[in-house]
Length: 360
Ligand code: UDP
Image (cartoon, rainbow, N blue to C red; front, side, top):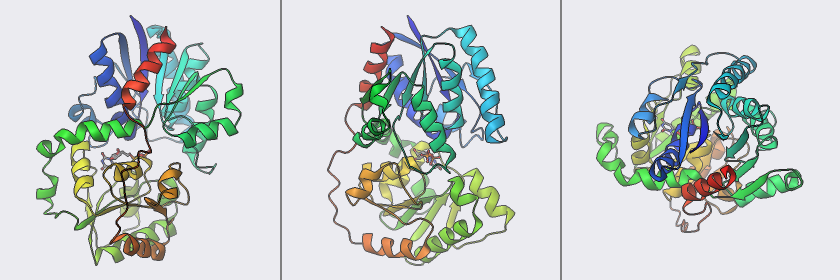
């Protein structure tokens, strides 16, 4: 049996991996060993996803967190290399754009182990984002680049990737499968709507955690002021990322919005189903809003998911509270048609088949 090592570290990676691990287990043709680098470690940022989404237990927990980017990537590189020496996998699978992604890719590539990158080709064209650096470097040393969109394919084409020794394929976006699969049971498994006394279409779901927002106090304050303004018309619910909570507490920021702890995926899906719209700087949430036929106001200066903006489903407002409020108003009575398929079908199976092929 062929063996892959999957390297995970952050919340969105757990959610994406849940989809593929389930398919790998079902087919029973490939052995999967999971390494958890420990980048996200709070129970509500990690353990809850493994439990709720029945992700196989990691064989290795590296517990690397709370340190700078360089130290974190370096420690991960060293420890992942040691594990790969023992496990001798045929390939590694990595997701997205975190330090865990880059460290995994580097460790494997230098040992001539095949690197499979899920969510390849995404670009924000903002080199101040740590994620952008991680993505570009990871893509360059990946053997199988599984792209979520045509935009991602075009990005790679423009960077000359079609002249390199690799395989680039558009398999669709794996988050689509996550939303479709787990939405079927989320209502039975979540009571968040009742617990928070929320009413359908009468609240806004917000999340803010990008470093470019949390590390700039003026930006962060402006975003929260925008949310507070909107909250006067429509309740704003924000599950607060630990990074954002830390800054909010440090500066004693206080706003009239409903702040809750990070929630599990079933709660998130119920919030997405019932909310009126989404305001977020998260990559994943922009698409999850779309899959749930909701508009998303993007609290960033750019997005990797440009097709959402081009088709009128999402709008970029940065940290501008006035633009945020205006966009909220313009989306109030929207009759947008969300039936367009931007992110593929049967994504998990497409990805699985590509992985199987490269392992032959
Ligand atoms: N998410 C969650 N609980 C929360 C906030 C987010 O389950 O309290 C999910 C969200 O639905 C999405 C993923 O986490 O699937 C997005 O992760 P995040 O925003 O941390 O990262 P990004 O997508 O920006 O890389």
